[in-house]
Every structure is written in C-alpha cells, then in structure tokens.
Length: 213
Image (cartoon, rainbow, N blue to C red; front, side):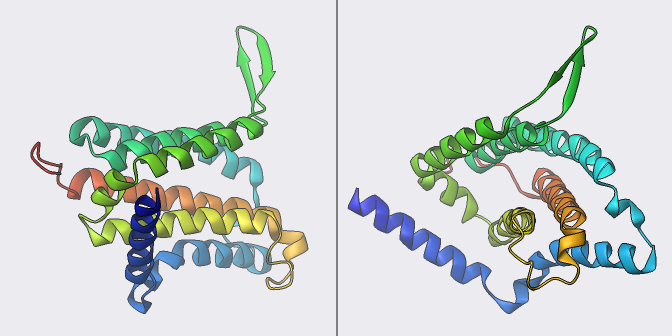
C-alpha cells in the first residue's frame, strides 16, 4: 500500500510540474472569457444570452450528451482506459445536469432529484480512479497536451462550482447579483472546453496498439 501511495504521489507531482507553467496559461482562458462575457452582458447589453439561466441549462442538456457520444465512440475504437474513464465521468455529469429537471413520460411528469446520487457516483469514480491509477497515468503520459488539456477542463468545472459556492464574493464585482449567471456561463464554458477536447482526442490522438502497455 505504501508503494502504491508513493507511486501515486510521484505521478501527481510530475503532473502538476508539467501543467503549472506560464506557457499553459491558455487552459484558464475558457473560464476567464466566460466571466468577462457575463460582465459585458451586464454592463454593455451584449451577449445577453449568458444571463439566461434556463437557456444555459437547456444548452447543457445538449452539450453533455454530445461529449458522451464522442468519448464513447473513442472508447469503443481505442479501448483506451482514459477515454473509458472520462466517458463514464460524463455520464455522472449528465446525471447531475438532470437534477431538478422535469421529465414527462406517457402524460406523467417526474421531477428528477439526482444531487445525492451524484455525490455517491463521484465517490465511486474516485475509488475507481485509485484502482486504475496505473492505466490512467499510462494513458495521460502518452501525450503531454492531453494532460494539460484535461486539467484545464477539470479546473474550469471546479471554477464554476467555486463560484456557485460564492467563494469569490469578495473578489468579483457585483458577485451577489451575478453569481448565478457567472456559475452557469463558466459551467457552459467547461462543457464547450470538454467537447473540443473530446473531438480533438477522437481525431488527433492515435489509438493504442495491442502490444502497448
């Protein structure tokens, strides 16, 4: 167990050293641009769709399945552990997006309550990631751009959740008024970032060969 822990710590340390470089600042741009769009909409009345929570939530219900479709396709073709893991993670994201969504089946309506289920699923994903750490880091280490990009995607999601919990109430102007559109817009940026990442993986990342470790 101690050897496994040291191995994970070593991989994570190497990961952060490769990611936290000035030249990789671009991974912060999706979240930053999303924040600027909200303030532009608020002050200059441009791109006002970013202030529409219902529109962004409905858009997410289209974007997340698109990400899932691309990653599932790549998973079936490549059998790459990272692509498989990310595809399942997107399923969890989709379950989260369905929270408080009203679904209608055969004339009956049902309100989806998935928040507690998502917490459990994320715990399962974390345990799975620990069990698969060698396979996941093996896939990540094949291409440095994949390591950097996936960190950027996850950071953008984390940024949206930090805004949702009002972690920047003392930093962002008019945060009390705009924290909902800020959260939704940054989360939408994360979905778009993830979709672009998935498409790039599908087209530009070669599949693993059968004799690859």
